[in-house]
Image (cartoon, rainbow, N blue to C red; front, side):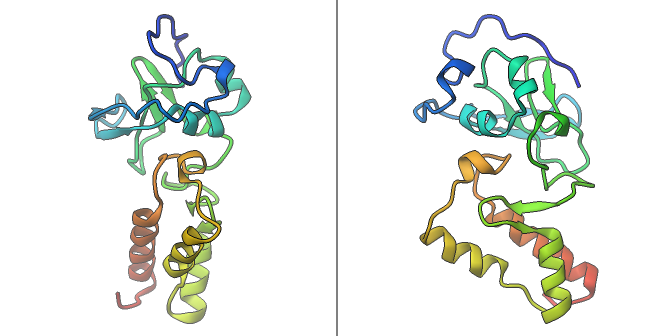
Length: 173
């Protein structure tokens, strides 16, 4: 893990002083390449990081804006910007998309994990994960921007997990 103290941020809406609740700061535009795996990564909001970083990790950073999320399952990097790379040790939750994550959470708002989906598939031959999540997204609603490490909706991650687990278990898709 490599940290650098951020020095001159011209526009930081999510410094530790403002608790990261400025929802008007946009995600970084475009995609950047992860310095570890060299795959494309997407920008995340500072409020996502503010809700998921450990206090120790937050104390090392001046600003939470401008980070990118690496979704490559085998890459150790979860977030990066400039010469700062943050890993699972910097998060208060397990990044379920990363290989070896326990639990392998795919829906942070409603508690769906790969383990739960696999259990349901083994018991019933099918899973109601997507149906359950979509119903709960309507009522009570979701908080993906602050609960999911990607800062975005989990539905594609849940669909991908279901497909992989069905193949692993030899179930038709």
